[in-house]
Image 1 (cartoon, rainbow, N blue to C red):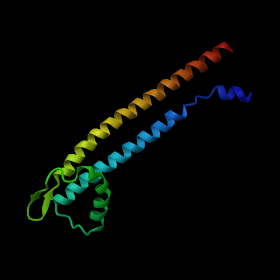
Image 2: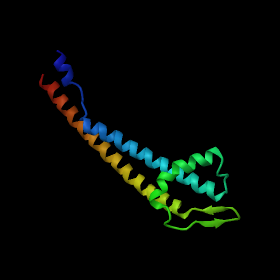
Image 3: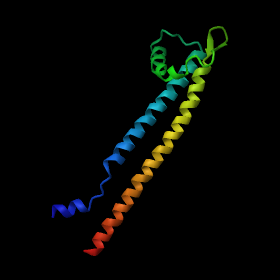
Image 4: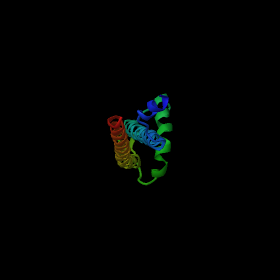
Length: 131
């Protein structure tokens, strides 16, 4: 009896469940980078106090995301004290493309999950008809 209950369950393969989790973690990581870089650009453009807690927090978070792009473009002065971090803007664009690719990967993994679920539902339906 317990065996027939296990046959009536739809089980996703572990690799699909793990893939979905990993892809969503990557997407969250990239979105965090985009948001922190946008805030970085705004804080620098509007001459935010670099010793303020929020400014320091954004500087720390965005620093790791900026590492591959640091020094590509020189910053441009805005007004007397602010400046436009063009490298950060370039990084935002690159991370947006990365987020777009990860979004496509999320759709792909979800499609695989849907196909696997549909195949298992078909098998369950055919088993219940044969009984």
